[in-house]
Image (cartoon, rainbow, N blue to C red):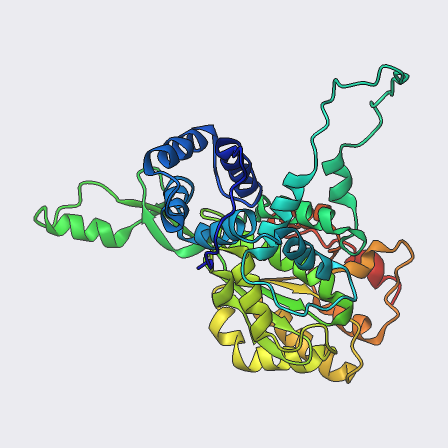
Length: 416
């Protein structure tokens, strides 16, 4: 809960406009707030008054928050916007550690970075499109061949994105889905138009009719959905890509009706860590913060063979049952024994219904399987694809729905 400090109101306060700007910051932070809620908030504050600080906090809370996962975001935005007189320094301190090589002196709480980003965006002035200088020259630009900002962001490498582009890319990843087709099973369900005869139901109906069979019951195969198992490399060379992929996996794990029975996620660097229960948290910042706290080997070394051995030994029978689809996200740069790595990859391939490997190194045109780890892993995957931008993650849905899509495997196997 935010700590309340005395407020110093100006001589001519503009409370209604401040509430409107506060609602705009909450909307940019992810809360679904429309004009109706803003009007209700202004009327509620007018009715409740502005004498008690706690009453003001909970009055706006009642108008803007209707989900449990939004409470943390609301509290952080409220503290930065209304309570802290040095909120600009707080926001800059939360956003600066996003630059590579800068370490955080104080770890931000869940939702603080999202609140800081929303408030920093709100501080930027909006320039009207039709506002032109009287002395300026009007320039016409033909934009038929130009790409929109969102289209450029789809093809931009995760490693080359700025802080603002990373924030926008995360919002785009939250809207992506990863649908999967159901798998026909041996079990059936009753269907009048079914092609198979259901002898069990036919005999049960005949027992209620004195043993006389008047019609043949029909059935059709009952569809079932596979599990999704994700093995994500979080070593130093994969840290930026891993963060973006985990944002995408959080959206997949919390999307209803996507088709997956269960989503199991594991991170590995020098050891294997199960983060499946953390991805079930609705708030993405809280989920990834808990996952990062449990995975102690973040941005460390890489021991792919040993981590795959730990997965095959401890988790394979638990999560790989009934034809699971496996996503392996790694660059394949491993210095351990290539023979042991190939053995574990072969076992993982035989245990899965389909094994898809996402490698960000495929972004280079001249990529060739020269590394020892890549040469050992490549023959034991069903599909080998790039995983360095939003477009590659969008194409992943097509690869999952098409079992005959090998990606770049066939071309690279000819180079071995």
